[in-house]
Image 1 (cartoon, rainbow, N blue to C red):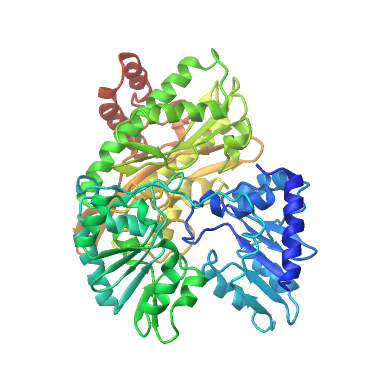
Image 2 (cartoon, rainbow, N blue to C red):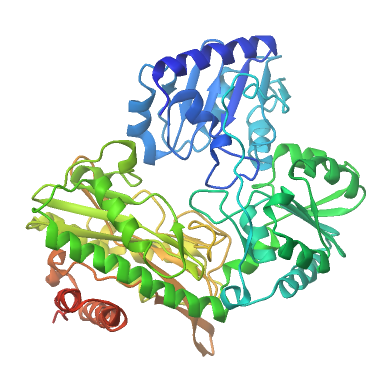
Length: 597
């Protein structure tokens, strides 16, 4: 973490740069040129500048103001980390989504100049910014990089080699995927398709890498044409065997940094399909004015959200291995708690050790959230940011974790009790479990969107005057990103329908600030159910495998259907995991999964 004296020094340098460049405002987003969730160290500008280590933020600087905006996951953390740094945490007003834009809009004067680095600012965000300043008569400098000259010991861009993600895992060869994408391009009237999200490129070319900590990706851009695919990447990242196969498929490897120049020359007068949410201002501006823009989700984003039969079969195997690691972890915890000192951080390390023993394990899919008592009330608490509290004799322990495997990506949360739970904890846990089960049991017609299903998971809680501030479910990638759309189950009006083959999380929760948090999360896959005179109906299959803590359940709050689901789920957990456990672990799991009547 940056010390506050360093933050104050950095602030002085950047203010001098503001003056030198005649800028009145300078905006720094938490982003890299691919605009994905995880950002390599080279682009961790906000962390270097301010000392704030959260994974979502925007900084706005003027000659007299330095403010940081973040989302509700990080409010408490931002207050602490920014203290004495010269930067202030700006708490949002009610219902303000783009509040840093509101700040600029309220404070910008006629003739002001606003600077930003267009390489790391999305075209969609820039348009919102322009709209918020409509009529203000301000100017923009979108090529303003004030950071490179003053960040002297800046980390290099990451380097890792590509590896083949073979058909035994992907279920479909590269040429088949390329043909499919080109067919869709023809339907949309696109001569070229610009891919800026690295997960789209990894999926299309059946490769993976290690450039980012939690997603097996390689930093790259791609431009798909009718005959060739231009792949912008450090050529040393592509081994010879893969390079020759790419050559046969018409995939041309070009230097990573040449994307803007090539884009401006190749696309002239042609139609280009791109997603303005994940395309930077710089890339959009490099497309000639006489080209036609087609703005939509990328074609690979839609195609890869629906898992094929091979992927679904592999996901089942991965869930067994992940479930075995979790079962071993919770058994070890119960057997050793009270005998040895345990902290939140030491538990996260133990869980990593057990996962890493599983076949085809590549790494974690995100930083494990291991949180005890009041820390579990912070939805995205990270024990790495502090020594992590000692696990005491009584309370709730929340463990939200996941792994990357060659055959899939996992994300699962369990809340267990340490000592005897209170009646309020049992009631809270059971209401969340009811929501979780009711979403797992949902049956709905084709064409249903995620926001229409969100209420099912909240109904029991709303009936008791409770709620949670995040979505109920996010899409999950396949050996790609743990958060990967376009689908979601959330109050937000997402236009994407839930389709057969989509993998999504199911994670209702409650957070009582200063006391505890409870979350129960499994991954669910959508599949076709019956077809009636009213059309095709869909259902979910729960694929994550780990027991749910029965001692936290108030059975009187569950109906027979919910009890039936829980008993049947627990039978499946035991049947699938027990063959991979020791005799002691097996009898412990038998007890944990015993039916309730």
